[in-house]
Image 1 (tube, helix red, strand yellow):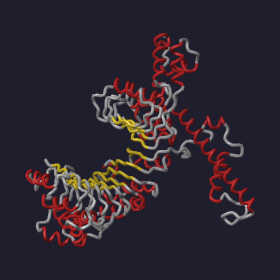
Image 2 (tube, helix red, strand yellow):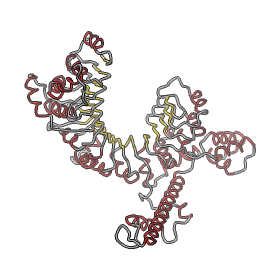
Image 3 (tube, one colour):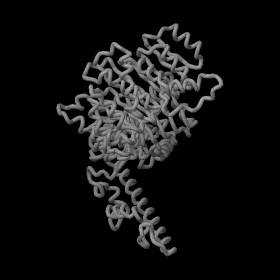
Image 4 (tube, one colour):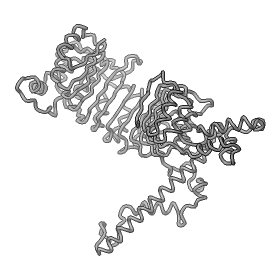
Length: 576
């Protein structure tokens, strides 16, 4: 077995999990989110699941942050823990002298054991190294014994798991700052108590590997350049740059840079071990391989960019007080830091209750590369910056917007609304969009927001300019959604599309590129004013439709849903 998902299995006891995982050495992906996973299960994973790449233990309240330390190796594995208990029981004087358990582990690992059982467990424990984890998710787990334990644990895992690319860990902001500034003193208590190497030692080993990899890359690049140069000389031709005998081209500058940093005599072993003599505090030459971070605050964006310059997916949570801070330009200042990843970022999630206009500047810089955008809790404005935000991200494939509702009153005359919607079709075009979720939270306090008229125009333009939509969810829209959908299906293009699919004897052509809602498979219209007649026209005209959510739609009755089920058995209707 290579993949196992037990998320939410509350009846899977820690003992059962441990017994099961001992027989799965080939496991690569494991999800225990929301289960009674404890420290013993983590130790079993570290001992027996040596091929694990992805681990999710989020919402496991029996776990403390320090329980995750065995994933990064060190002395806190099963064998070392048994050695600690054994030595503590045999040598009571050790406790009276005040020695910590970590010192007992150190003596057990570096001295000849006095018993065969201790020898076997120590040799087994010392053979362990960090798991080859690429992804580690551990949010909302139990509290630690000491203040700052989550942050210290996160710093240890970031340094001891060199292959990590995706993380969601508590205390990530402090951990990145500590690694960047090499401020590891607050974590000394945790490392001593758990018997794992000090963070300073782990940092030095990581720095040593970093320099070794760079040196090897430089040597390989130099050897490749030499081979190319010999090839040009043998054939008696010029290099691609036009200079005879020169074949290194653009690769020469990185080699020279590495040579200057290494020095004429290279980096000695002592320099690598000391670390501080090679790289001073605050130096950003040590970079992490992280590609996805699911929990970040605005204050740590600059440090995150220095340590993780190749982030492709980022989730940022902005506190409302932090977003303003009594300064008008404070929100814009933190938002511009997102522009550091311009050209790299592919997915962005922003949990921000401040003005949506604060995001225009960074999205204009990096929006051209975004394929996924999530905006949660944002506050729109009457002049509708949402349209400008979406125009800055033309390559989006997935869009999620959860905003505060408009405050202006709805229209009374629907015929006048339809006439005004006629010119809104060409305002926006997202030709690659496949998934759209738009919802409004009416429980949030009333603040200045976009008008009902502007929301309808944006919605119509968005639906019309996204012909590849497959999943569409429009929840609690505070406008006449039925009017917008009716305007779409009454168009000439939609009529032609329905004619090709419904008329007998007519061969249905491929969906025209400009046909809106022609490929939708899952449609969500919960808490809206949509009518069953409009829904049935959409279902009949779209042969790909599989499910429709009509929860809390006050214009839809139970009898309407029953009649629709009989008429279209291929579609699942959800109605409450």
